[in-house]
Structure formats: structure tokens, C-alpha cells
Length: 281
Image 1 (cartoon, rainbow, N blue to C red):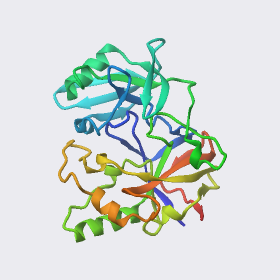
Image 2 (image 1 turned 120 degrees about the vertical axis):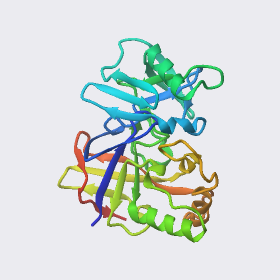
Image 3 (image 1 turned 120 degrees about the horizontal axis):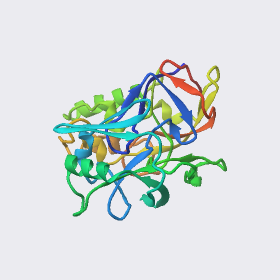
């Protein structure tokens, strides 16, 4: 029976993540996951795809604040209590979302850390409380789900065995192995065979009161080529080239790794490292 081997959140989209022993489940994902995002002057999202140096910004959560850190700068502290005003519209891919803009101090700090983007300072926004961003219904089989500032789905699930298999192939090709953090998962599973998550339909922790539905394979981008601490790109072709060659989906082209998922039961339940999961194919 597979088990959760690690849990990860990324409070600010495309900045460093946080590993947790447990996390509350919400309809938008693990609590605090992708609740903040960087945007440009026009409100369009900015990620490591445009600015790989974002990987160098450390993230920490306390009981009252979000804290960002970067070498050579004093920490930036942002209250978890949403700002009362500064509402704005922002764009994630094709979705327009309501957001709350953080202070000018946050914008200045981020610009000091990684520079301007297209001649303007970066802006930090948080997902507006009460706003609903629906998941693409094309893969939902009539169900409904929502997410915050993730690319498209509230949960990303990967198995350790899949990474092991990928790294074996990378090394056989003369390339370097890559760590799991390159794929920025929320839930990492042990006890599944390599790419076993691709055959799953649901993952249920009955004793914990939650269940997740697998919705679609996750297509990977250049972020997988970026060192998630230094922001440097060692090999711009890997692991994407190897993943594309290993592609288990004949009807799809590109590089795929991991599965997007939604919560079907258990809003507010607690997921813990070590939870045993029943799988349904």
C-alpha cells in the first residue's frame, strides 16, 4: 500500500518551497500553497520561466507572517492577514483572478532581489479571499474543483519510484540525476512502482477522511532544468529530453511527469507524512 513520503507547499508561486510533516487539505490545495504570486506591471504572472533567479528566494511561514529571504537583503515579512484594500485583477495563463496587492515595500524588495522585469518593478499579490478560480472542466468528468495560483490544478502528485526510474535513464544517457524539488510536487508517494501514479484514478486515506482524484498528467516545462537553490541552468535540455523520450502517453507529445489531482472529500482534513493510501485504478 503506498504512503505519503513527503509534503510540500510553495506559498509564493515559483519561489522556493517548504517541506512539512503535515498539512491541511483545502479545495484549493494544501493550505497556503500558491496563495501569493509575482506579476508584472500589467498584472500577468511572472515565474522562473522568465526569471530563473526567483529560485534563490527562500520562503518561510510563521503563525502570523510570510517571510522571504535572499542573500544580501534583510528578510521581508508580510502579515498573513490580508490587506484591507489594494484589490486588483491578475492573470495566470488564460485565467483572470481577483487578487490583493501587497505593499510597495514588497515590490521594492523583490526588485532588489532579482531585478526588474521588462523595465518595471515586480509586484507581489495574494489570491483574493472568497474568489473562486475553477479548474478546467475538460478533465473533471462533470465534477467541479478550484485552485489558487497553481498552473491549473490544486495538487501535484509524484512517486519516488518514478524519479528513480527517470534518474536511471538520465544517467544511462550520460546526464546528471535530478532531485525531486525540480518537479515542485505537493505530495510524494512511496510504495508505488515507477509511474504507478499514472494508472491511478483515486487515492484514499479512509482513516484520515480524505480522497484525491487523479485528473491529468502534468506536462513539464523549463523549470525542471533550473537548480531550485541557485537559479542556474546546468543543462537546458535535461530532464525534458529524456522525459519526452520516456513519454507513456502515445496520444500526447512533450515531457510529462507526475499527476494533477483534486480533492473529492476531506476539505479541512489533515494529510500527514506516513499516511497510507488505498489506490483505485
